[in-house]
Image 1 (cartoon, rainbow, N blue to C red):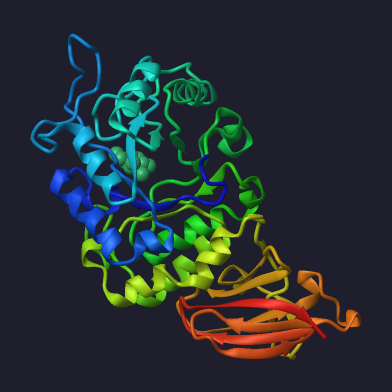
Image 2 (image 1 turned 90 degrees about the horizontal axis):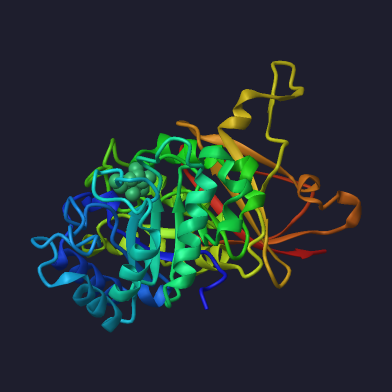
Length: 388
Ligand code: GLA
């Protein structure tokens, strides 16, 4: 059965774009095992766009792998990935062509699902470019959802329509296990922040069986690769990972795993953060509303700075609670947290016994109100228990 927690793995697009081939996939598979990523839960290795020939086979009508990039065919690649204990993912598109102009699955959904099953695929990312006019997205995703059910293999269905057509309202009914809710990420703090903010209102639609996918992570890219952009630093990546974990978002690595440093590996295998992300109840994180500033008279005022700093709270199973203080501003900020906003009034006598997940620092029991001074782009994330 497909796991009911957010999928984890690697996808080729962010780093490699069209420069994919059998060696890159095999080396990535090797690195995922050797560097402990499989052990940490990253089990899907997904090949994104640009894997096929430009046209279907004129006789069989099937999509065929690029004979230069994949000279031994796709089953051989899939067998290698499986031999490492990983699962294998493929990519196609609901339109007539993929976003990079290779054959899409429109009107060939059942044939393509059979082809992917023959490759031994366990995952299908399904994009949204070149959609013929008058064909609604819900029907297109429903067709591939049915085709995957019919193909004789259990294949995780990863929809990718970038949040169009209010996708969160209907995608679960198509059989999709995750759905992209945003445009493409690039490797910059601004891109990460925009994506994060864009989904605050939609977090409640994500739940076991079908998760809100806020795109592949850029952690470890440092501006290199296919979606390089300005690049991020380690602080930016730390906050990125914490947000993805608090959102119960799929954790699909997009950096070049073969070159991941120990620091990058330590971040993406942080046990507490993965536990927050993989919590079986997959509860929505909520944002507390009372980030305040003081005006010149020392009075508390609500201010625009609320958009620069956020406190996210996520209830976990086993009575644990995760709290993330995230500073999205380009300068240091004091971030306030009123416990009442999280449903813990002072009169209850309860507070939170808090442990920071990046440093291991124990704060002990905090009550009523607290502030943390967080450097630019940085965050602190606590796992807590209610306590008197
Ligand atoms: C779209 C998707 C990306 C990637 C590219 C491939 O832009 O959103 O994640 O799959 O297509 O062309």
